[in-house]
Length: 103
Image (cartoon, rainbow, N blue to C red):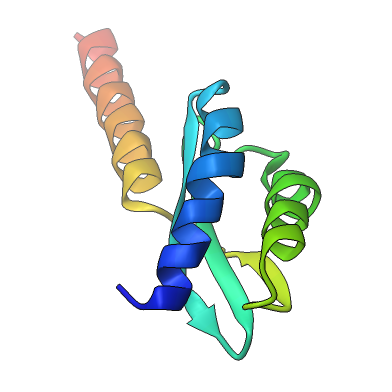
């Protein structure tokens, strides 16, 4: 891990993760590109309607306050494997229940 990413991880560990864990969530870095830190919210925070607000009001504010390594923080907007697996489980259960209802 680069020194820059270690600094970011230290900031996340100290200021961000404790707050997110209180809501059953976590955060993962997705890299720094062109001065922008990309992050993914995990756990209960993944896919939360307030995710964008959390990034802007909590993560970005704390990261920018404690380091000059990045100029912005943005949410990586891809479907996480965790969310994909959860959706797959729900759809499978519905299919099984629909089949059982036909009998």
